[in-house]
Length: 112
Ligand code: 5GP
Ligand code: ZN
Image (cartoon, rainbow, N blue to C red; front, side, top):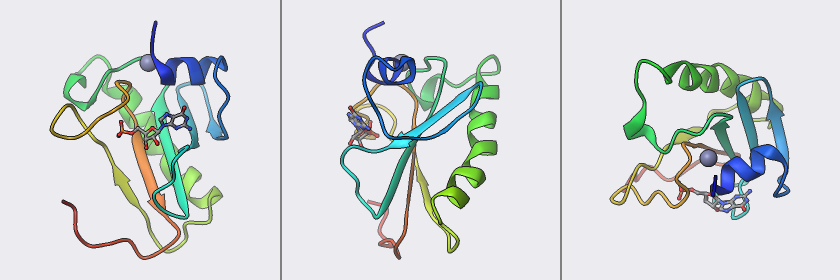
C-alpha cells in the first residue's frame, strides 16, 4: 500500500522509534513542533479518526494504553498534549491515523 506510515512501520523507511508493541508503533516527528514531538500510530492501516468504528476501535484503545508509557519514557512528567488532525479541514497530511504527543515545554493555550 502506498502509505508513508505503513512503510515506516514495516521498516522500509527509517524512523526514530520510541515505542513498539504488537499493535502500536511510535516514532519522533521529522519536523518537531515542540521539544518532544512523537507520532503514535496503529500498526494496522486506518486512514483517519473519521473511520474509527466498532471493528477497529481496539487499536485506538491500544494506542491510548501505550501513551502513558511513551510519555514517561520521553520524560513528560508535567503533562503533554495529544492531537489528531482529521481530514481536509483538520489539515491531516498523512492519511494513516496518528496521534501527535507534544510536550517538553508549556504549550500555547490556543487550539486554533
Ligand atoms: P498530520 O499533519 O497528518 O497530522 O501530521 C503528519 C506528521 O508527520 C507531520 O507532523 C510531519 O512532520 C510528520 N512526517 C511527515 N513525513 C514524515 C516522515 O517521513 N518521518 C517522520 N518521522 N515524520 C514525518
Ligand atoms: Zn498506512
